[in-house]
Amino acid sequence: MNITVNARHMETTEAIREYAESKVAKLPKYFDNIQSIEVILDTQAGEANCEIIVHASRKLTFVASSRDADLYASIDQCDDKIAQQLRRHKGKVRNHHPAHPTERPNGI
Image (cartoon, rainbow, N blue to C red; front, top):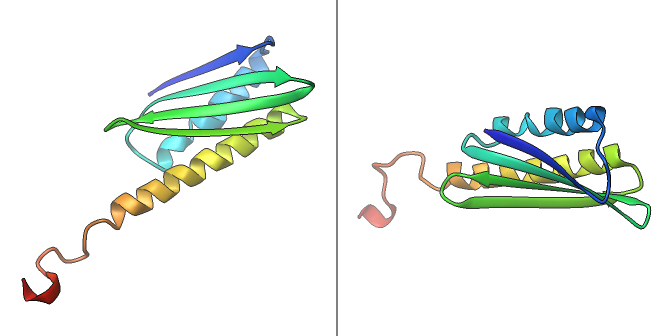
């Protein structure tokens, strides 16, 4: 799994980069087939923007973004949003098949 942290209109410190990487490194526990994660940090009009893009197998892409006055809070909010998306998708995939494959509706 590749993790990249990019910054626009700002310079990132090593602490911010490590914080963002540590937060998104926990995402594979919500969905196993993650191939790459991209974190984009930006500042506009005094507010910090964070966007996380997760590429998974079978051409699945999950995107979350958040805006806050504090960069660390923005990263936390964005991480929570993307984790919720991944949990929801894993639940849909898991519940797609019936519990007992031999049981068919209407006796078919």
